[in-house]
Image (cartoon, rainbow, N blue to C red; front, side, top):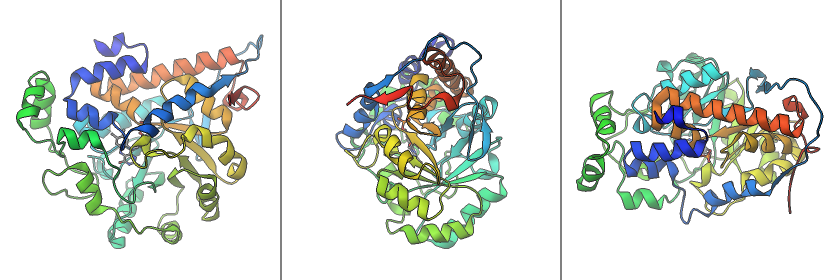
Length: 373
Ligand code: FNR
């Protein structure tokens, strides 16, 4: 049982690669263009240096609040598209694992479960703005009526990034059988069986039209002319917490504070959009210094261990998001796999807190963490 055997997220990543077709794994794993941002997101964590306090003693408590709600960890499961393609149990399995772990989960606009069909304790809805503002407003209303707590507007996607792996693999959504998928699929019969026999892949919020490349789907629906003015409009149609995801500079974090966003996610979409932007981890400290008193600062990209979470929080982040990591768990073992990912991160975070002498999340600050030059 690969879920039981896994001790780290990279064990689950390796197991996932054996479960799903290569084109699906590459879709999860890949970044844009030369994948420089993808690699830098991760290598930025090599700069982290802890300054431990010894002989502290006491109990460890990883609990915190995120957007004013209690959470058992400073962790959020990020929105990801086409989740049922990774595993037929899809978003409901992810939502269940998140609810049991006491952390939020954000359903993607490009997800494959309708908001009305998803149940959890602390669900957020990630929005892409459509050219049709009326349709966008309806979507926001559906999320509100379905009980979603927060709205996450993703702003790093005026056009789809250039995902070279998907182009080379000829990936379409839903996947189509071709000679190469058949050959690869011959070693993954269970995945194909589930894809063909469970619910058809439908989007969370709209009817797709046939099998298309992911970038074509994005290009057809996203509005590349969304501007800060639209945020004022969004503030009017959504009265709950508003999170802006995909902020990549101090300058734009200040603008987010000016439009009264409740939080920003420092993110380059996991290296899947603009290649060679800054590594989000390196923005945490300057952004927290500038606007940390006006909004919550979240960060994602390259978080793979509980020590990474401790580092990001210590530098000033209120919470971290993970994308690929929970998908590794999902691909490997459905809901159990996602639960395993969260529990590995929890144990690693607790151990790191113990070793740096931080009993509470609030003890994780710049007296314990810095980035080496
Ligand atoms: C994403 N991400 C994403 N973000 C978003 O706002 N809407 C979306 O539909 C998607 N879809 C998506 C699919 C897949 C397969 C991945 C891997 C990522 C980005 C995601 O929310 C998050 O920002 C990154 O995944 C964070 O980086 P790590 O944790 O994957 O390194």
